[in-house]
Length: 342
Image (cartoon, rainbow, N blue to C red):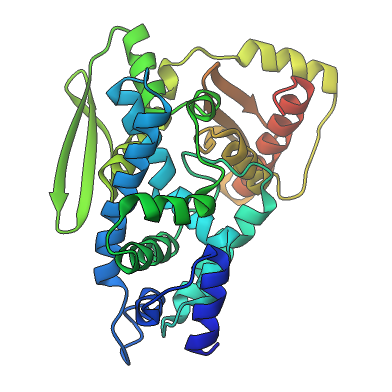
């Protein structure tokens, strides 16, 4: 697509006409496209401008909210996940000039996953990791507006707010429990102390979580809050054994189903369901191995950590681990349906 056509298309999306069209051209140029200046400088200022604009918004919109919750709200609305979804929704990637073909596959995988979902307001990450390039485009386009309106933050917000809709609210965060909140609540109930150590390595923020002095998990991201979020997700998976188990309840559900039950591609489908429910991804274990090496049989289980506790399900005996995992995932999906979790 020609630069002039891309600029016009972006202006239409924003409902704003740029005085300096070169700003848009720069905002839509990836570093792999060496024929003209790329968006990295604009992304730098766009990240800060969007962060401050969002801070102003939540500060004024929620006068009774404490600083901790305001920070969570800001992080949810300008996370890589959220901004990447904004880019998908408005089709911004198709205007990007680049010479990195690997980007196309990553963006397509993420876009397809987003389009399959029903819930737009995903605060803490869906089934496919959001490519940073998508968030970069949103930040660079925001910066182009910000510079074009002579660094008027209020005008930037008026022009750009519509792209960020639906804006994540405190109610959304309550319905999608923040992994860090889940982690602190879990450890508090068990009388355990949580410590978070944060540092930078180049442009990356790294967060490590320790429970009672022992290392549990770490996460990294360009953004500090996202690094902590990734670390919390990993910690919840590692600490799932501390959560109350709903094993007995799910065994009762199994009895009502009767017999074996198989869903093709159940493992992938369960992963997607967990993404929609904002649960950590399922974990699988081999529960039992029987038979000689040339004709082994396996029984696998699957666990899902939720705010209500750990959901656990054993599958049927199978000849291959992959099939045993799929059996456990199939029965878990059926039990979730029967228990009105879905």
